[in-house]
Structure formats: C-alpha cells, structure tokens
Image 1 (cartoon, rainbow, N blue to C red):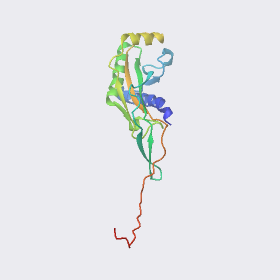
Image 2: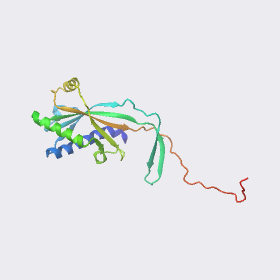
Image 3: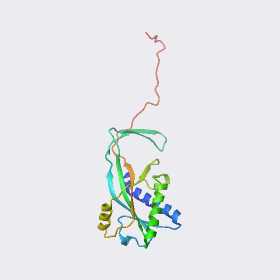
Image 4: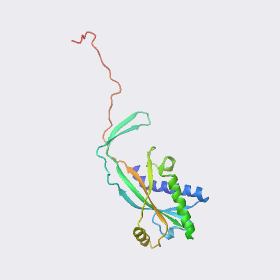
Length: 199
C-alpha cells in the first residue's frame, strides 16, 4: 500500500512530535496538520505541521534494476528484479501557536528538541501499512528558510509572520514495475554410468 506513504509519513511525524512534546512540557499539545490557518487552531498552545513541498531528488533513478529478496509466509524465498525507486523529499514547516510570544518560542524549542532525539523515523515511530519493517526515514532540519519565503508563505495564508522551522523527510517510493520471479536450482541429481571409463 505504498501509495499511502506520504500521508502516513506526515501522520507518523505528527505523532512523534505530539508524544515527544508531551514528555517535555508535561501536557498534551495538539499537532494540527495541513495549511496553518488560524481557524484550525481552536485550542492553543498547539503546533502546526504543514507539508509545503514534495520534491524528487536530482538523482531520482539508479541505473540498473535491483535484486529483491523476500521471504513468503510459507517460508520460501522469492527473488525478482525491480525497477529503481523514486527518491523523494517531503518538506515541512513546523510552527508554534500560543497566546504569548515566549510560550510560542518555548513550544517551538520543544518540537526541535524532539526531532533532535528522533532524527530517523523507524520501528514503532512509523505507523501504517505503507512501510516495510526495515524502513528508515531520515528527518533533517532545513538549514535556512529565507525571510522572503516565510513572509510570502504567511502572507498567502493571511497570517502574520510567526516562529517556524523547516524539516525534510527523505523517503523512497518503490517502483511497481518488476520482473518475473527468478528460479534457482535447489537440487541437482546426476546419473553416472558405471561402465564409463572417462575415455
């Protein structure tokens, strides 16, 4: 169900923020996903998590198909070649919403602390059927969001500039194109003629 991987990555990131910030500040802080519109923040303090861009990384395709090895429910090994994946960046804006500026800053600091603790989403931090058991999704801070970009974004939502920080989740979308199952020789039997002399 990999078509759900973008949505489930956003949900997993929101859950990680909510759980981690609760541990830091000692109470549940709502994480609102989607465009950061004031009317969506009915309870404050709160965090906003907005995916503002989906980008394909420049080297989006490897040169050769890769060999995939899977173990079926019956315990047998299944091997096949699959076309290279698409490598994708999901860019997020994390914003803080509170009545007072100091509380906004403290809340944003708590969110940043959580994502320092969990620089990779994996294991029980990934919730959904889009992820392989060994899936690992790095979460990297965006080193610089320009003032022009932030002002344009907030102006587009009819909001004043507020504290926010950017993060990028790096994931791969596997190709549905694959070759036939490979057939390997498990047992080979040889018949030797007892009269054969090797000449």
